[in-house]
Length: 234
Ligand code: SAM
Image (cartoon, rainbow, N blue to C red; front, side):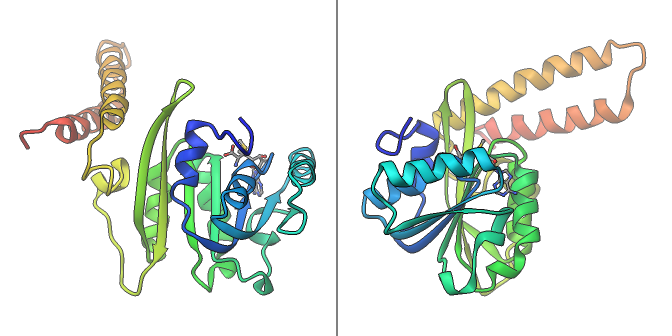
């Protein structure tokens, strides 16, 4: 992958980014995402935020090698701390981390969200935690996708601040409110795989000596939920 040839995962994230004046890509590493968005003319300016020195230097190298110094800046810092009010960031992208970590970055950086930037997020796991945080902060999911790339399923979404309360059902939090409305082959593949895994786990739990009641009950609930979503006759 490079800024001109994004991975399938990164391309799906890029496709959710609206035309923006200033994008802050947090946890940018190589800065391929903002570099791609700039080179495509989709955004005017970018900040590549990184908390670790090595990836920060990767971002700096990418900016220089792609001749983007006039429109992109790498900043070393934790989460949204790299964003200043004078930047007028209108879109924040955070990709390639766990949902808990992305949620933590947003929670700790809430003071940087007062101008309600669009959020484009891709969590590797625990997407439901992130969707819940978004709903609790009046962010509505306005774009959502799922892809299979290099042996993994990835979900990505765009969330926009709205002037009314946002609430999602448990199913919408777990499966994605928009993904549920358009159950693609990739969506079905992901959840069929999860269903098989959960059935296997349930079998092991039920036949184990300790017979852990809470785990069994949780796994059964998950299986019922997935079966319900995959059932077209519902
Ligand atoms: N966003 C790129 C992508 O999707 O391919 C890179 C993902 S990489 C797996 C995660 C990056 O996030 C690492 O470079 C890590 O240093 C950075 N990171 C983790 N926590 C961070 C934080 N609190 N603030 C800024 N960057 C962070």
